[in-house]
Image 1: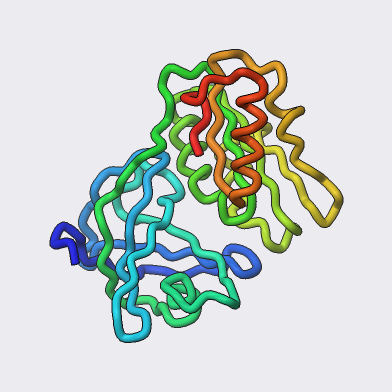
Image 2: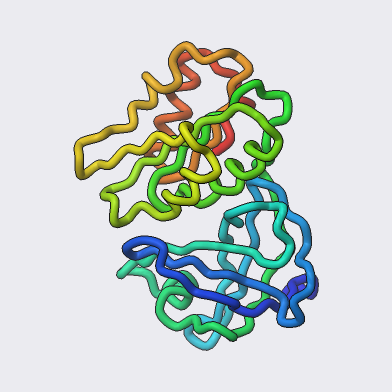
Length: 220
């Protein structure tokens, strides 16, 4: 295992929605964690079937906080990997080895406006984007699609950090996120950040390409 990984403690566990659990990680001595920026993820070394499985998870919440890292995982009945361990066996006080943050989708500072699109558990990276953009007083919108309200994690936090800018699409109420309508007529300096099912991401790629968007404006 990579020697640069650090040992962290599971400081808290919280059921944030139906089948979604938040895991809070901190140093055992209460010291500061490495800085991360919106769009970052970490890799967790998780004990699975007598071995170690390396799983990446988006860091969510406010990047300015150095006392804790937050990740979230969705239960999957078919999973027997690391995410299943976090949902079913992880306990407060347990120790995990975690990598330093890696960011392959940082905020595009040249953008005049930012569209944050998340579906299901894909909303997790959008929390950090929203916190950072709000603090920097940048213009942005959050578009959150989910199957039903009971499965919609972090709605209250998103409402707090982006008042008047959160748009919700509840599939059980026949509310559909229409990417074509959402993206049409946007300024050429608008950037999109999207996370969710592969089919949605591919649809977004096809839609922006058909509209003549430069590929650098889509962060997926």
